[in-house]
View 1 (spheres, rainbow, N blue to C red):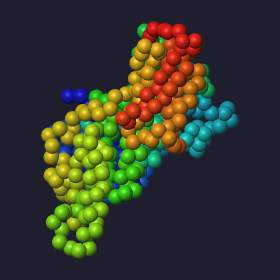
View 2 (view 1 turned 180 degrees about the vertical axis):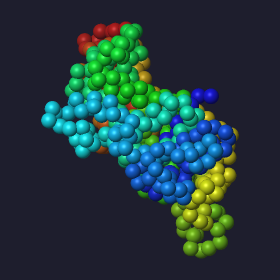
View 3 (view 1 turned 90 degrees about the vertical axis):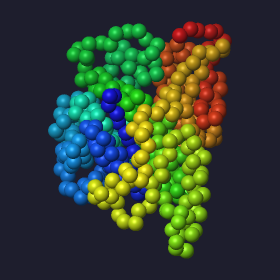
View 4 (view 1 turned 30 degrees about the horizontal axis):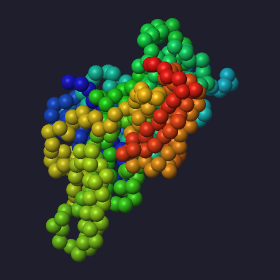
Length: 395
């Protein structure tokens, strides 16, 4: 069996923790070695399972461990060598305390992800379920490895061969052996760790991102944006969970208008996310707390046999050769053409949507090509490149 990672995200207060926990409980009950991880600094796994948790993973049932990650604790106890490497990137008069890393926004999130990677590589678990912070923080979490890699490539002496080979897009165009890792600098080794982390999280056979939402206007709109940004950063979203649905047969006039509202936005979700498997979770008459309450979600909503299967919904971005040059395809569902900005530098193409942007490295062959057009077509950004002077080239 291939090990798997499932990341649950959504707007704050929609029930991500209970949904992630239900999957973990179901997985453990099926006999799989399961880890449930929280990267949300406002941890509530302990509250959900009514158990006081420490700073290390704890077993709470057969085949089930839970872990509330404390990034500062992880830095000090699990990644001492990496902290020293990062210290070399700081001014000479700086120390190596956590506070010194303010120059690297998102550093805490990075160590949370590195810990998840370490857990995955340990082979102690078959499935890892990650309860993430609200949408904005999750996006910061998931985009940070690629962002830090980009800054390292620009600002620090990372070996040029390693940079070219490890570029997520460009690597397919090079047939050069990786340099000996033992001979690489600390900065290059850190770069490799970041690359490995990116590839793990973006491997569609390993990692799934699943969205949790409720049928309300603001939440539905944020869920659409979340899906768009996840695709911008190349993550595979393969499930949508509509939480807190009122029963249709509720007999109380107070809920009549709420039933209409929920019905309207539930329909919108089904229409907007038709490509995704969609799961419905009822609104319970009691607080979701304790193992018994979590089992209710398993029995009511997680009943399909393929709930843990790999589902590749969208493709990773790709460069394709055309008659006149090359074409970049990038899935951006729900993106409005007016929101998307494109910039090209000598070595990359920058895609910006609102406050989020992604720097996509260009294969060397495209360094002599220029963007001639960009358009949105059925949720996909299509960027055309043509060679300066109209000459053609081969990959």
